Image (cartoon, rainbow, N blue to C red; front, side):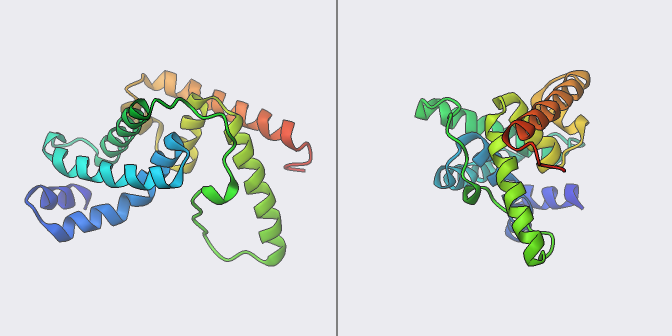
Length: 185
């Protein structure tokens, strides 16, 4: 379905474009927020990214997967935006309420309390990771991209992506343990 939808967008089908934006806006916002660490900047960046995607749809080669291309474009736009703002990776911790939530179902009150504490712990741990490792966790575990897609997105060999993914998970586990020894008990 995706290639047909993209073809319709290339032909100027506004409904197809709206469907693409609806389908991918959460992922694009998550990438923008990951880099920019500010909700309003991420919203502005996401809008700019979709404008750029629309303008550059013609550069997507036939047979290339749309999602890695989209996320690579989003990543590059955010890096350019950071350069323009002359901001480097911020050192501040990310507040739990700044991270977009995607609930799977309504948890019980007990589960909600436990999940809230665990989510807060995980987001504090993520804030401690290096930007490379945080990016790998975002792409692999939050965006649920395949290793091959990450390899294509970051223009890295598959072996490098595999080792970075493993190192990122190890670093995240260490950060979680250092924040709360009872996590996972």
